[in-house]
Amino acid sequence: MLRDVIRQMTLDQLLTEREEIGKKIEANVEKDTEAWGLEVTGIRIQDIDMPEELKKMMSRQASAEREKRATITKAEGDRDAAANLALAAKTMAESPGAMQLRTLQTIDGLGPTASNTVVLAVPINIIDAIDQVGPFLRTKSNKPV
Image (cartoon, rainbow, N blue to C red; front, top):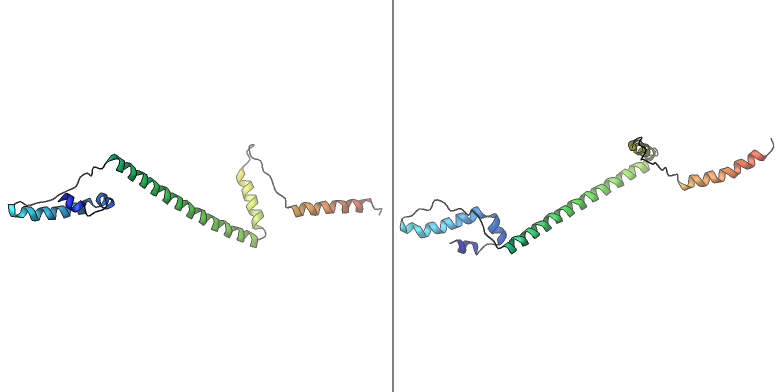
C-alpha cells in the first residue's frame, strides 16, 4: 500500500504531506483487512529514509532558494533606498537652506574626536568668483583717493 500511494507523489509532496499519505494508506489497508475482522486505528509515517546523495542535492537546492530570497530582499531594499534618496534630493533642491542644514547635521554627528577629518567642499563657481574679485580689489586699493 505504501508503494502504491507514494508512487503517485512527487518528492516534495512526500516530504511535506506525511499525514495525508498516512490517511491514504490507512484507508487502503482498512479495506483489505476488514474482511479479516481487523480494524486499523491509525498509520503514521515517522521517518523517510533517502539516499545521502539525494539529501545533499536537496540541501543545495534549499541553500540556493535562501540565497535567491536574500538577493531579492536586498534588491528591494536598494530600490527603496534609492527612491528615498531621490525624494530627499528633490526636497533639498526645493529648499535653499536644507542642504546647508544637512551638512551641519553631518558635521555635528562626527563628534569631536581627533581621528575625524572634515573636508568642506566649496563649489568651483564660488572659487572663480573670489579669484575674479581679488584683482578687482587690488586695483581699487592702488588708486589714490
